[in-house]
Amino acid sequence: MGTDEVPMDDKAKRMRDLLSSFYSPDPSNSNTTSKNASLDDINSTSFDPDQYMNILAYKSNLEGLLQRHVEMAAEIKNLDTDLQMLVYENYNKFISATDTIKRMKSNISGMEANMEQLLEKIMSVQSRSDNVNTSLFDKREHIEKVHRTCNLLRKVQFIYDLPDRLGKCIKSEAYADAVRFYTGAMPIFKAYGDSSFRDCKQASEEAMAIIVKNLQGKLFSDSESIQVRADAAVLLKQLDFPVDNLKTKLFEKLEQSITDIRLNPIEINNASRDYSAHEAAVHEFVEAVRAFRVIFPDSDEQLVKLAEDLVTKNFVIAEEYVKTRICPEDLLGVLRK
Image 1 (cartoon, rainbow, N blue to C red):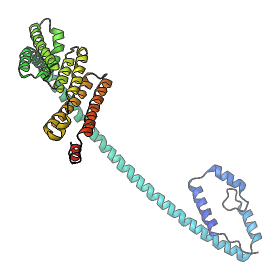
Image 2 (tube, rainbow, N blue to C red):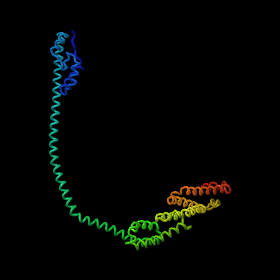
Image 3 (cartoon, helix red, strand yellow):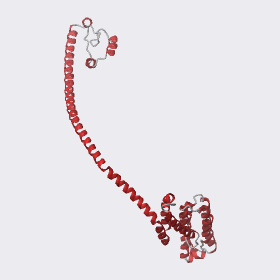
Image 4 (tube, rainbow, N blue to C red):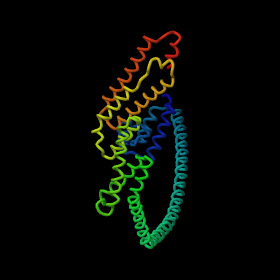
């Protein structure tokens, strides 16, 4: 009979299984293993030493039995060594865990003392804060009352000074400031204009009537630029003046400005100053269109039509000049302008 050598992989596996079963036994795995294991399996839970010896003596000769004895002695020694190392490592971990628990207990004890001190300080601060709030409550209420009174007095003073402010705006033609002052005072006039501030309201309305009249004058003045007229329309709209009723007249003025934009073909070549005036007039028209879009948001179609008319007019002038006045020596200057 030949010797029955155990492979190193099987030996290592058996050692790991033994150590694993020692530290974390799993009854379910043990039952399953015991059912499938053979009777001569030394690692099974149903191992029978007498039967194992009978089988081993039957299968092996004396030399094989001695060799198996040496191998088992080496395995036992290795297992003892591994068990000792595991016990040592676990003991070190146990000691480390014990020290950690002691330190945690010490820290927690110190933390409890610190928390008690912190709680005492918080309670002391809260008590002092309550005392300060109690002592300053009356003064704070008085200060807030005085502050509200000051704000009210400033508003009252503004209302009483409003007629004079509007008069100064009329003299300096600062109509935008006048509209801003008056619209700011409107809530107070609506609430107290018939009682406390009757005189101020009446004087302010008289001044605003003058301002509205002056704005209307600028709106329809041929001497004023289109931008100035547009600004006047914006201010009138802020005063709830029926600007939409003036829409037809305003657009008639804008159409007339297109008619007034003239560019004589002869003047293109001979008078750059006249061309600059033409360019300024076109720029003024563009600014007026931008302002009118703000005043009349629903008039984009009409404004686009006016812009198209202006562009068409300029192309017609250029076409007439090309047909009647163009010559090779003047071509570069014409294109430049």
